[in-house]
Structures are given as C-alpha cells and as structure tokens.
Image (cartoon, rainbow, N blue to C red; front, side):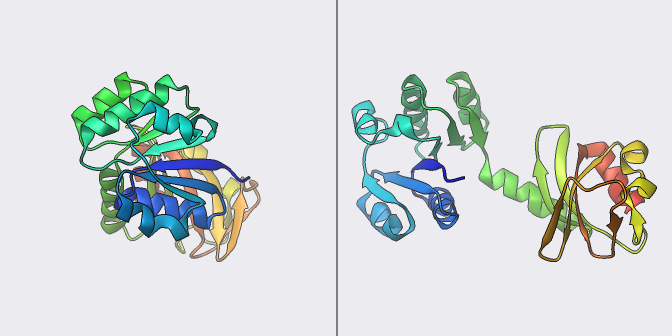
Length: 218
C-alpha cells in the first residue's frame, strides 16, 4: 500500500531513507534547510523543498500533518532535532520517527513524545557484529533489550525435517515466522513444511533462546 512520508534532514541517513522509500513507490517529501542537499535529492523524491523544519508555519505550509510518517533525520544539530520533533508533536503528526545522536538526545526525545527513536549507527553496528560473530546469522533485528528477530541459514543438521519434527518452539522457545528459499518466501509456515539445506529461517524469540537455538539447534 502506498504511503506518504516526509523526511526532514538530508544527510547520509535521511537521504538513504528517502531514496529507498521513493524506490519502493511511496510518496516522499524531502526537506532540508540547505539548497545543495535539496538539489541532490530532487530526482529521488516526489517533492523536495528548502525549509526551516523548526518553523511551525513553514511545516504547516507543507501540509506536514497529512503525512503518515515524518522522519526527523537532522544530523549534528541536536537542538534543531529536538525543536522540530516538539513542533511536529504539537501539530499532532500521526507518527514521528527521530534519529538520535546519543543517550541524552534519546532521553529528551522520549520526554517530548517521539513515537520511535532511531540509532542507525548503533543498530547497524549490532547487525554487523552479529553477522561477523556467526556464519549462520545473515541478518539481525533488535526489537527490545530482550527480544530479537534473526535470519539463520539451515544446515544439514535439520535438513529434510518438518517444523513439527524439529519442534523448535517447545525445545528452544523460539517461533519460526517464515522460510526463505531462493526468491520464494513462505510466510507463517505450516507444521508439515520441510526445511532444506541453505533455507533461511526467520525466527523471533528471547535473545537467550535464539542464541541457544543457533548453537544447538541449527
């Protein structure tokens, strides 16, 4: 389903998010105070505008309240990031996602009501570290301090067995959300679905349970 996004701040992170959403076919408004950043993103967004994102009147003129999501990706200027987030929340924007620079920035964003706070460098660092530490893990998404989703490559150890036979939930406390086989994706697989070598299992669970499954089960 096509959605409407506004990306405020067109540094490396903001530009990357903008380009990817536009590539996926969504409507994307790109906003930055710097002319050169806006010029660079013009061909990779639905609309690209030079504006002061801390100015409520400027945001109102852009119809910012009509967007499904607003991503505040302002870089090193923490004050502008906080002020922009505060204005957006006071305008009752549906969902405001904000890039945080550090722990203190995060705490302030929490207090003023940011709907989701992003730490792209930390998140990417965690995913790369997980991938480096285990040849079985090809992707990792941290949901909270305790729970994660991981993608694991199936080995010969579990090949040609069904999910029912493996009994992963009972034995390890994890749930298989999907199975990727080449270009095919099996969402909500059935108990009798077989696992083959090099299938990718998408598994959710407590971090301790996932680690045990990675080491013992697959």
